[in-house]
Length: 162
Image 1 (tube, rainbow, N blue to C red):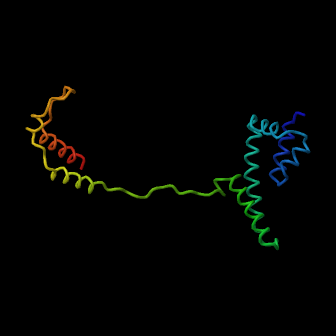
Image 2: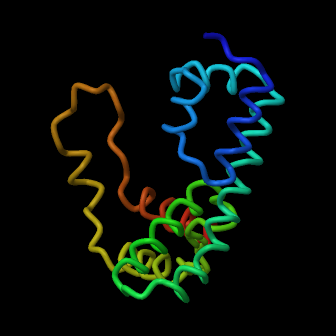
Image 3: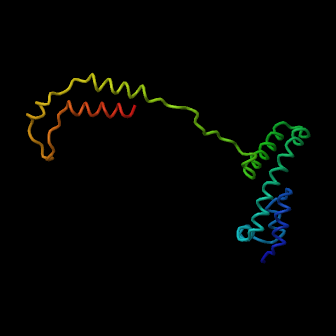
């Protein structure tokens, strides 16, 4: 049986007021997929469903105090309130969901590390350039590098970074 828009709006309203989805679907004689397909494909129904989720969250949060005051069994009260809190956090996450703070308030100063690296480069024992020049030619076709010139260029680059 195809549902009318009016029936779907009634379903949404009654669900927001606390009736169970299973009972409503049985009453309307429809399958959940048909109901949700209509809600997804119609912007008015989709907006009404979003508002209903927020209203349902508000109603469930409102019940928390009443449950805590009237329920004599502490364990049942805890269970009922936990269920309502969890549901509210899912139906209206911006208001009732967990707020995770992932901001980083830390600055990193790398100047000390760069100065230490520069000292290590300066204190390193340089290889004599004649040893490199006397070595066997390589197959790369690159010219041998004078290590003193390379060390000076490295220190200048590190100084530019600082």
